[in-house]
Length: 614
Image (cartoon, rainbow, N blue to C red; front, side, top):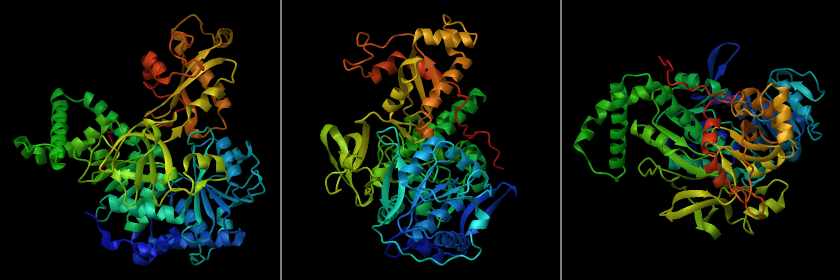
């Protein structure tokens, strides 16, 4: 049930600082944020009034820096009240925030800092700045504030406690709604990230549109774990919580997600497909260790729950067996959903396609999961399914005030109040996706049809890999860069709807034999082609080549194939381009093997089904 009585009125929130101020004024003593304090080994809470004081200290610090309006402030901090405080203080001073990904490569972070011209950087750890500095001197950066107090290595480094004044500065609320609020860097269709320019009006509109589209449970509690550098996380969790007054618990690292969910016990969860896929696979793995009758009971429960869901959505008949659903939901489904904390009323999945078996299982266990669609350039959310109108085969109905039309080749074009102002410093790239005047955004995504404003996506016009994490990568620049190494003659990057990128490579025979010889491996042995030593050596070489690409665009697994790719065997076009579908079909077994075991370099996400939530 939506609790709109405690929302900040839209008329009072024309900018993000005004929205924050409206929330503080409305519920100053309610809990705003929760976070884990590692030194104290306990969770702490901030009320909205306390959060305002923290923002005020950052306002005072930024005011003392005397940055000109429009200067960029970069944030390299994990999800926390500090991230929000820096962002809000910068926006209030008429500055532009630039989110950096903590898991990104130092070279990629340096590229973003150089491209954005950020004058001030806030980092969680001083050593992160030194890593960036080793790749790029970042001449535009004047000051780097290290929250951990580590100031060794660069005269620009200052300790956060010393830099922040004790006395907060009151809000000035100076920016206009049309002013640039944030640069959100996205890889888009190129190898290097581009800065998407989003205004205050764009971000505020999208947050309110999302809040209206998805029912807000009374006393809503959210968990924030998708990096706040993502426009998706910022809008649907951070900004929407300002509107509704929800409590936001921050997960400081993906490996602590299970513990955070168990502690926070959220009522709503905004995530990417990967988290729900983890739950699904862990549930299946857990069931294999249970007696056959337990497996059958869970399967019966999910099938019955799905049937009840279809009837509730008006797509199925009422059946007599539906009468036992409340009992099975209590005795079977709820224990299965315990890893989510035990109070979850709705889950939202966006940024990439959610596999149908995962959606069917969650819905069958009684957890409504709503798929949505958007892109950073659109501000970012375009559509989402509704609780009473949920078709898991689609990415939902359009948000209020969103218009669509079909371009050539069934490309989806959208027009919304949230569309970006353009790409930072790249008029040519802007013109390629924004129609003259900025009225229509070419999404690059293909739709099968527009059915009463509901979207059914079929693919992308340009070759973009969308991973299960929601991150996007263009394979061609990666493949070309890998091919610069004399060891590799061809590369095919894969990873659609997968947790990370992997590559199939063909090699120069002499170079491969020499490498395997140094590792004590037999070049003629098929088994040795899959030896972990060889894979690690190749990943090291590939990593050196790709060090200027974003962290999510790094290759985590690699496999050598013997066959030469050519026009004759149907793996290349006459212009020497990869026939990706043909390659995927030919090497389906190898690709599955690449994702059959976790790569040594892949980041672990701890989401165990056997969590003890007490």
